[in-house]
Amino acid sequence: MPNLIPKRKLRTGTYLDRSGIDNLIAHVEYVTETTYSGGIDDTPVDGVTIKPISSNWAYDEAATRLANAAAHVADSDPHTGYRLESADHTQYIKHALVTAANDFLVGSVSGVAVKKTLTETQAILGIASIGARVYNSGTQAIPASSVTAITFDSERYDTDSIHNTGTNTSRLTCNTAGYYIITGHVEFASNNTGIRGVYIKLNNTTYLNVNIYASVPSSATQMLVSTIYNLEATDYVEVLVYQNSGTTLNSSNNANYSPEFMMQRIG
Image 1 (tube, rainbow, N blue to C red):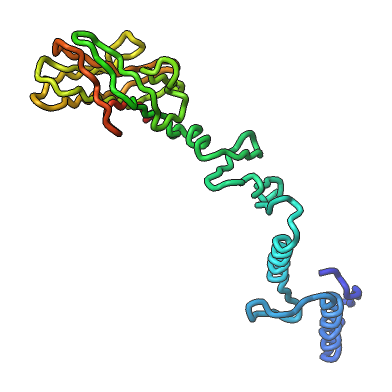
Image 2: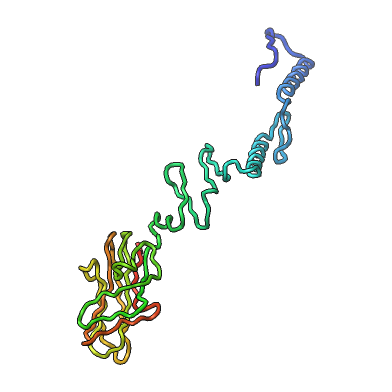
């Protein structure tokens, strides 16, 4: 508090009488209220006040901030999207970036967010759905005593250009390196003679799995082969079959299970 009372030096041995003391107190109260009462909001804060000097500044400040925020939201949108502000008011997220369901905002560089689709975000996180499942819409003649690659002219799905229905149709080619589960299923027409085999082969050089079945009397032979393998980009796999019945046998065409070939990235 500034020194508002004129300094008066009292001589040694000088005393203020009762009247002088009362006048001094009255003067101090007058100066205090005159100096501090102008512009002071004495409204109680939460029902509490201290007189003569009090303030509900903290309440007023909070109310002002809330009012300003409400006015910003209610106003026309000058930012092409409302913004979330950091403490220094420099970071912005615009709703105009999100244009479809399942869009994501992903950091590109410091302070910059870019829109990514669900598939793109899954790829960034390493959980994208990468795979293909293919089938043959007809039968295929398999000669006796010969390992033969099954061809596939149709696709159930292909998310990574893994299969081509016009060229090298027996192949599923890896374009995104990773661990894949690889599965094939083929049904042979009924024949009681010999054995049947089904294989998964990598790059026409390495067998990844082999299953051998005895022929089933008076019934078609169902053959399944599966493996998990770490594939590099450009690696390709094929499903091959074998039979030694002594005559050509057809691979059967049955919806959704023969012949079917698939691979799916799992990590």
